[in-house]
Image 1 (cartoon, rainbow, N blue to C red):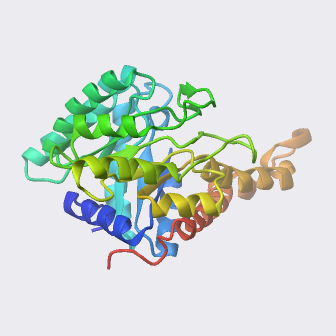
Image 2: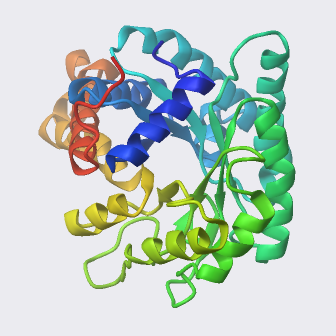
Length: 340
């Protein structure tokens, strides 16, 4: 059962919450980066999450049509086949989807899974993300209510981002400023609108100074201890201990201490993209520099097919990215926790 059923995905999240660990959620943009993520999870003996952003799906859809839905569906179907060879369980997820792309990405994908469930099958994706951080919180939660109902009917978990994450990802950008911190009032309004599981399960991407992309130490002030305040504020009103399943966005470059604090306060999923992109590309650059006269037909020569064959440098890239995924599993304490 390499691709999680809805029941197993819920079990995965419950185990992470109880064990105070989190699953790396690895963005992929090709069959090769998918294999790298699966290999990394397998080598770490950790289950995990594979995710596709709108930009990743567009890339997967091909540069002729650039169709996000077909790109995402194609890779998901591919994953259902090749994941059988890996001794871990993974969930398939779609990453950041802003309002202007809902009708061309998340809503059609929920419909695909709804049709499958109606036939007695499992959903194609196990969760989808709605990124309403560019909207007012009222509008954000109104759309989240609609999507949560549809997702729950299709046995899918919804991820919501209620306040901004700094930096830029796939065209959605926010400044790095004091607004990058979710308040207890934001969390209470979320619980009031979406419930605490009775209307459907959701993951909450709260902001505690998170920033997407690359940043140097000192440029970003993360306050993962804030998550404890959000849990406590909602627990006090609703009488449910540790009510939220949190997602850590902008995880690349975070310190071990920041990650540990986030795990203690209910983070069950942490996104990684920037670090794994670099890990994939670095050995390719090294190969090209070392073998420039083989990958190029310099001065009228014929080059070396063995060096410009994509499989040669592709294997190096896969191994490097897989190693970064195993490192993420160790940082998130998911190493060795796979469902037997």
